[in-house]
Amino acid sequence: MLTSTLFYLYDSLARIAVYSSLSKIQQKRLSGKVQSNQKKLNKWAYHAPMNHLHKFYLVEAELHRVQGGMMIAMDYYKKAIALAKEHEYINEEALAHELAAKFYLGLDQDKIAQVYMQDARYCYLRWGATAKVSYLDKRYPQLLPKRYSDRGTLSTRTSTPPTTTGWRTSSELDFNTVMKASQTLSEEIVLDKLLAKLMQIIIENAGAQKGFLILEIKGKLLIEAEGSVDQESVTVLQSIPVKSAWELGDQLFISHTIVNYVARTRESVVLSDAANDPKFANCPYIKAHKPKSILCFPLQYQAKLVGIIYLENNLTTDAFTPDRLEVLNLLSSQAAISIENARLYNNLSELNQAFERFVPRQFLQILDKESIVDVKLGDQVQQEMSVLFSDIRDFTTLSESMTPQDNFNFINAYLSRLEPAITANEGFIDKYIGDAIMALFSGEADNAVKAGIDMLHRLAEYNQHRAASGYVSIKIGIGINTGSLILGTVGGKNRMDSTVISDAVNLASRIESLTKKYGVSMLISHETFYSLPDSNQYAIRLIDRVQVKGKSETVSIFEVFDADPPETYEGKVATRTVFEEALVLYHLQKLGDAERLFAECLRRNPTDKAAQIYQQRCIQQDQD
Image (cartoon, rainbow, N blue to C red; front, top):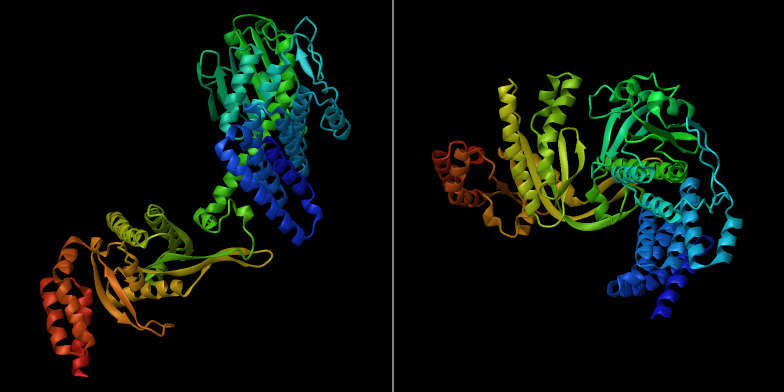
């Protein structure tokens, strides 16, 4: 079994390695073979994940790399490394680190690549692959420098300052501790979790009582993490300006003078006896609190200030020894890289969330895409869905009485009230068309009908708010149809949009336009009616069979009146049988009998506008 799994692992990796040099046809064949190998690895991984799952993940990472799924590849590299490490496959952990390093090199992320390549070298060295280590040293000298560069340090310590170090450090330095801490930081991609782990690691390894992490964000220094040895948890993402931290009372003590000095000079500050330090003893914070040991140093990435670590120990002087400074010197590079990587991930996540406001997440899911970056022009899929159209009645007249700003304020207030009804019922808004909404629902037609009812209830609440503020009430119409849709992307080289193509969409729009004609709030097509698992749970009655523009066959339309005012609702329920009998007589052209039954409906329910319309039709047609 071991031989078989290794064969499929390395067969896939070898094939992927030459993917970019092949023709399109050859790439397709290669992908098919790799997918076949992956099915086998996935099966073995299901039964023995501790032995095989990291292999499966590593191939997935490489496959997404060559196919352009960069964010997915990042995640799979991370998973492969973590599992290989957890189950002590050090050789495959080394390989995963190496391939991840090459991946980031290809993205011009040299600093991130450096971390992965250093971890790869370390794993190969522990495995005993000295020839491989020598190869990496020669092949990637820019990523594996023999010695770390010196860093400026302002120190009042009388003992020897910390020296730079390479792979072999002093006997006092626990290299394994540094590597484990570095790897812990490199594996965390979520910013708030990274800051918490970083603060804990720094305080633990520095011998500090308390510490603060300050990040440079848009030109401002903000405290984003705070921890101490007395607290189990770290407070993160506070975004407190450094200049005001010392004014906030006993909660946040920090010397903004020292922090600003480090930010300006990019030099570390080590004060062995801060209260008696000739340079900083007179700063307001030190005069007020007389701290003993202070360490403050910059985190830099590609010559740019990423953040600042500020540490204190008020139990003893000379708390920050050369050995501890050496550990922090090693960790600081990884910390800066990890923060930038997490920021990049955080920015991409925020960007994806922003894109979701323009291209709904459900749309991507239907297209089977992980992210907006994976969507290509011409992507499409056919699916059975329900389409909901809603529109404000007489919006043009209403709009003319408002300023442009008032128009936008009104529309946004209205749409924000109704949107939750759609998302709460597993639908998503495909587009806004002025004041109109077009929403899509996969699954059962129930979702669309429930959303329409909920929208009308929310509108009633909104109208109460408008009436209390002295504004007129608004009315809307809702039309729903169910059918086969084609969802996809259309456009050109510089502009692409998501769209839905189907006659079912056009019919939903035309059904909505009929709500005004029949004096009702919500109509559904017979396709939607017959798609309901249990139509008896709704208040529904047949309204008409109509010839809709663009359709050769007549379409049955039904009113859903669950959201009508209680008096109207009760009246329609009580007269539903009489109304539908009158409707049959009307279509049989027995206008006198139909008119009498519609009159009976109105006697029992004077607010039934559909019955009023049909009664007038009967009288007019009978006179003609």
